Amino acid sequence: MNEALPDVPEVRVVGLPQLTSGFDLVERLDLPMHLKVHGPLEPLGGEQLAQLSERINLKGRGGAGFPFHKKLRSVAEAAIKRGVRPVVVVNGSEDEPACRKDTVLINRAPHLILDGALLCAEALGARTLVVGVTRESTQRSMEQALAERGLSNGRRSALKAFVQRNPVRMVTGAAASLIRSIDGGPAVPPGRKTSASQNGVGGAPTLLSNAETFAQLAIAARIGPERYGNTGLYDEPGTVMLTVSGAVARPMVIEVPTGVPLRYVLQLAGAPPVPQGVLTGGYHGRWIDAATVNEAIVSRNSLDAVGGALGAGAILPITQETCPLGESLRVAQWLAEESAGQCGPCYLGLPAAARGMEDILNGGGPAALEALKQVAKNVKRRGACSHPDGSAMFLESTIKAFTDDLAAHVLGNGCGRPVEGVLPLFEDGKMPTGIPGGGEPDDNGAGSRQKIYVDWTLCRGHGLCADILPEVFELGADGFPTVAQAKVPRFAEAKALRAVRRCPALALRLEEDTRAQAPAKNLPVLSQGRGRRALGR
Image 1 (tube, rainbow, N blue to C red):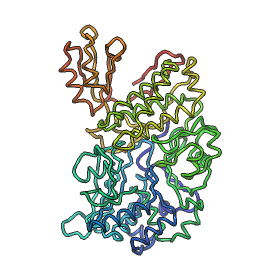
Image 2: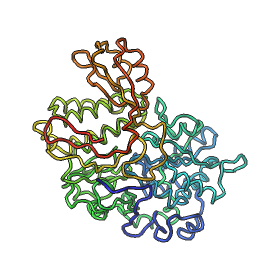
Image 3: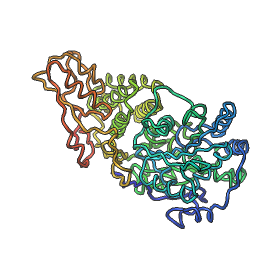
Image 4: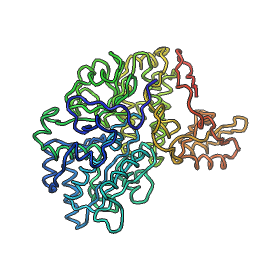
């Protein structure tokens, strides 16, 4: 099982530090130390910033990789056209269990992020700056940084600046979720997709980008595009912040120039010399096999070319001794629970996909594999955010990357290997497994607090439970539910209660899942045969 990965794990750098400059001097760069390390920063005009971003080919570092200069120009044009002040939003919501690079930057170099955001705010004429976070440590560090600069949300402030704290949820990091929460709504995506650049916070054009993106902009604005381009690749200059965890001896956040071989990064973290596979880009990313690892370099284009993904910068190797499908099943189950519960293809499709993966492991054969492929295909491009798309990409990549293991489970008696649980997850939708300091427990999280049971002595197969609670119940060919007991996702608890009350045969009951309150003792272990999976929690 992987080592602990706190909010601020070990930080390493390959070559000369840029974003991590000063980390060897102090734990956190306050404003005076920040200025000593990085020096003053002169303001730039809007078009100057756009040209700078274009020359260094700056793309969003949150996963989507959208060109920053296009976003900047789009916001400026919309604000001028409508005659309104735009808003600048820093997205520091980092809610994947395996991602810590933005959390490290906010905790240790908050002023570098604010430099980039304030450059944009001044260039655009913005009067509002919001920093979105989900962890107590990042909220505390960023609020302290704003205070050190004399920035506040006061009525008389020329620039209103504040921190927006949201629950720790995978969907919280979506741009639309953050904007909706800033406007006073829940931190989940709205029912329809909108462009923040055109219609963001309060309906105003909004420049929203990832925390690292603003920090990279601040570095480039100080040293200029020529010096910035001297580091890394010609077409993707600069450095990249990565979080390396999984089956490694030393989980870490590492700043590396683009172009560094991926195998060297893994070696620094103490990964197996020949990993069975490496998940690139996090849990919305893609797997690459051991042979491909030797070809890959750290860059968006290189990883895309070999079937991987840079994504949110998470790199997770696994050993030869674990079952890769079992590891992926744990992630698929977590992704299913992270649904906002709004879009049918997501909150119905992702649990169905996780069940499909479990069916494969439990001997479902070719039919189970085909069912999983169909479900993954059906959920894509049908949600209000990218969560179903990213989850489907992860599932499809798993099927493609581990063909030998897949054949062993589909056509034989399984691979015979246990599940070591090397991929970090949140327990009960709240805290990361083995990750202390992962934020405050969230009463509105996705973890299960209740279980629903079917009393077979009473059930008459009316099927109403499947209509009311499709997240949990499916009807078999005989018309009866296919499960006898199941955890209830938090977003579906009200529907579960309604199902219990409306069951004509009174065959359903809800109980508090007391095991969900206790810490997990063991991780799932797959039996060597095709039969069943033993759960140790």
